[in-house]
Length: 559
Image (tube, rainbow, N blue to C red; front, top):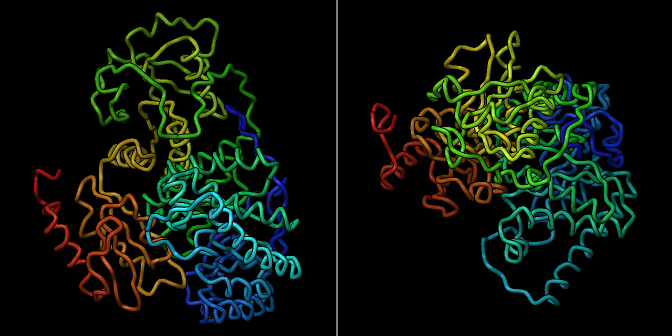
């Protein structure tokens, strides 16, 4: 990883149908159908829309062998219509479906959390070291033959770890941690290496951007240590919809892309799947354009290099900024002008920079460099090397850009600085946004980076063939009823695959439990099971009232 300059991580090449991924190939864009896989006609039509939107790869869910074989029929229809977009089968809980899909599609995604181990029940298991090794042999016995079948048919494999579906075995030894997520992937990668199987892509996702970024960074280090360089698929699960979904995705994915990590991207939105592709394209193009930027040569403060985004540069508190304060938003939080010292990053990096000029001041740093995030990062490292603990506010400008573009670029740029733990505030300048919109976006970026909570947070999956209700409409219905509840986190999940797990740090969950039925959760605990979807939002409100966290929308104490 280059600290200040964009340089893509070297990776091996994986062949997914006619689309090579990794190496020097472009960063591939992908999406996922939300149709019922056995509805061949509807699935084909949606695949064509996704392909026409510019996707390189598409995925469909395969709950069982029936769906896996339906994907073969879908693939044949798609090819007959002149489309060559590779299709990926998404498998959970059912190795037999994976074996069936290996003969029908271009890639099979398996989840290490439930491919061999049973689905998680949040039960603590105790193993001796010998017993744990015996458990690992079960991976070889099931995954090994699957790899040989994929090798025979030229089928690629994605090892897709999700924070929400780690096995009880991994959880019992490593806890619900980034280390556990990494080991879950590495166990399967070691089997693949033993079988000389190299057409592999790895994803390691979470709805929490801090967990996602931390885990992917650790995975890269773990693979490097064992001389593995497989391509990486990036995504923030259950990112949501609208501006929130775009911001959360751009913060997580953009941070890693800026560090050169990532060979294929999926922006998961609770919207029509073809809507994901323009967002992914804008994000990837924004980051990869930095490859042409002049090189930034600056000294590195090693103590500021942390894999864990929750570790921040220690700073002194000046008024509301720095120290243990939440990051500030310029133009929203009151920062006296006398407390501020404005500098360009280039000036801070200059030998003429005088530390005495910023004594007792909040430093606002801007940049005119083609890679402003890299230059601001270098300037903060310079401050640390000089022994300065002044809080830093980053100023980035997006004048003239459409509002949607500002959302993606600003979330990726400020998100990167926040995920590197370098700044104590943001100053977002964009003449195409009103003051209210700039403030909302700025606070949304801080919340997506887990640095400041200012609104209700919604975690919602994008939906797939397992979802048995209209997810987009349901998300809006839940939002309309609860978005005024400040600081509450509510998860809206289409099914139980990742539901209880991804809701691990949510306060409440609204989870599909079958056709027309919903289960409501308090944390990871189901409170009301299999209730009619028609009354589920009302019953969620009743649950919030019973728990004493409900406030009426016009309640001034909730503002």
